[in-house]
Length: 385
Image 1: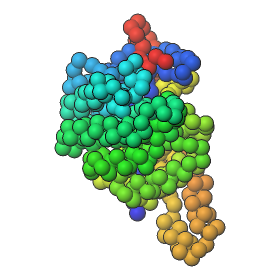
Image 2: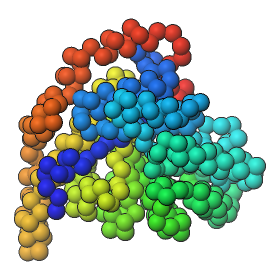
Image 3: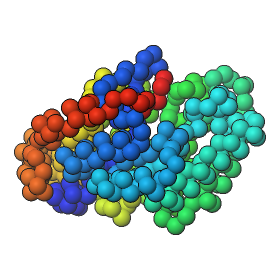
């Protein structure tokens, strides 16, 4: 098992560029002061999260939201700010042509358009040096008989195969899934099993992305994590938190015990070893909270859950399990979960020249006042619901 310090050192949380822009619900997008106006300013804000936490070294991009004329210049800007560009997220859900689906659309013209966009994203990866192409499809149907369920899976398979064949050395697909929304009768990739089957068919450069908000209430996500780690097909997490459905709240906000249980399986399955390739990403919408602070808090929540998971006495747990000691085994987990790890994390930060309290340090830095004063005029970034 990995030791405490190594485990924390290996935990890198990728923040999403879109979390720094204006976002909201389907009813309203709330604007805030100091929000970035372009991808370069998004990267600059993301760099602040890494500067104060020491655990957010990469930033995911979303295309076309983050399209620029020179991606090499954007990558250089990221390096200059002390971070790197991470996963490239494709968008085949915000065009009118995709009303009946993108890569599974019954119209071959629309399917071609969607696949070409995915291939463009791989081209961008070539320039940015990104390893991961993250794919989430809103494709599905609302009514029985609307389309042929099996034919849609065939179209999906064909599209994924074409994109897979385009991948370069060291590149891979992360195939995300979602139980429902925006389609309500069938989603074409509704669960981890569907994603897993497509990944197995594609080959070793295709892995599953687990979004923690994309499951039915009561789903045992840690079981899914254990199974995918066991099969060597857990590629990434999209960390967020949910009370009801895909709420996209800050990770650990609704159920920190669930996050601990997930991270326990990650530790148990070797997922903190960089060799396994598991990427830890945030996918959240900060609708009412300050953007940068929301990301800092999310990183801290993930660190706290991981620290507790690393404190589980693996030997004592195994002994209790082998002896059939039900309550004893549960107590081992609960002892770790009930530990206040904040002092340990404060010491970990101070050993790395960071402030013990990242949130307080950020607030005292004056960065927010600076960007509010500087970012006057122009169009704020956001997804414009």
